[in-house]
Length: 286
Image 1 (cartoon, helix red, strand yellow):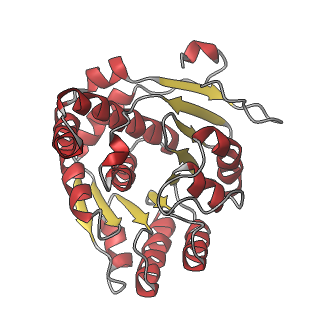
Image 2: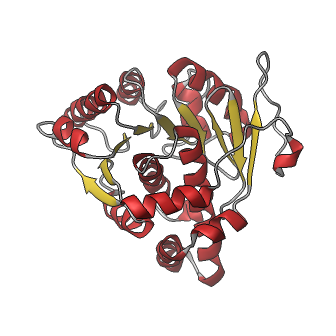
């Protein structure tokens, strides 16, 4: 996972720089997320240093998206009226040049999810964040997964992620044991994280909000996504040191996000960036 294994890598800004900027600016992040994730996501964003807002009513989502520094959309608990609110917010953010993140939860599972994901993708998200099965489904290459869980490893989705990034113009992130981020021209793998993280509900959904916070504070889409994933994964590693199980892990995790310094992030982030060749997709090395 050493960056030196890819000597042609485009340099990344240190993730600690992005974290310092986030804490200095305290961006307002508008989240249209699922019922399960609202409370933990709000607490996590507060710990990160952002200001969370959970606004989903169709009558105000577009207006509120213009007030926020970033928007995140998670399709975890869909209904037709929520979809309309999501579309209105995404349309407003895109037209205003505001960054927004799409989390296509279980994108391939039902026709409602496939349709909502496709309509949202057409509105130009800045970042798409999902597991391997979700990204493959959104790219039209894969199965439905197992509900919100991935039925595919990250490496299996790398080609689909690159193709999706090139087609949509979004930075695409595939989260798993080793995360993968690409804008279609460059990519990075992030090896921070802990196996206990998937055992706590809504941590993945909350990561989408953290990516939004990094974007809302001024990080570029690629650097912001990479920095957010490294920071989040490292917090998981630190939380696991004192945790006795999933419940205590959730508490330690929020504390780790709040107390981690920018220098500690720079010291312990395990990021391997590399440029993608023009004609073939980089073969996984992790």
